[in-house]
Image 1 (cartoon, rainbow, N blue to C red):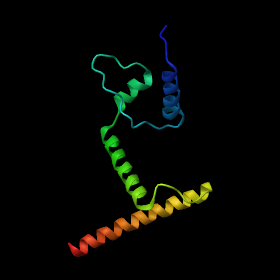
Image 2: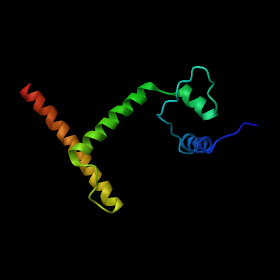
Image 3: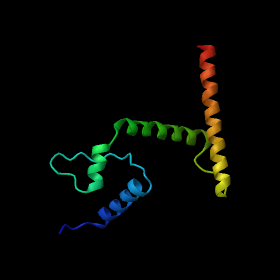
Image 4: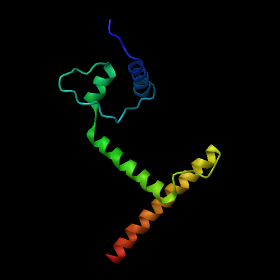
Length: 110
């Protein structure tokens, strides 16, 4: 009977929750192992169905989040959850407006 560590058990529980219950998938690549067979149903399934183009889109999203944090600050001023959502929406709207203004500026003066 194989021995499983607590880390393996937690990974299995969360992976099952994400894949089966939430009907979602992970964008974390499984490490490439040259000699070892990948153990675990979910790890094998993830390594087979991993989409590299989606993984590279994740990098673009993280870049946009970084730009928003640099422009508007990392912290939220609002205390209540609903107010934090409104503040985040305002930051996103301002970011989109600044991108539109930048594109218009490039079209006019370039």
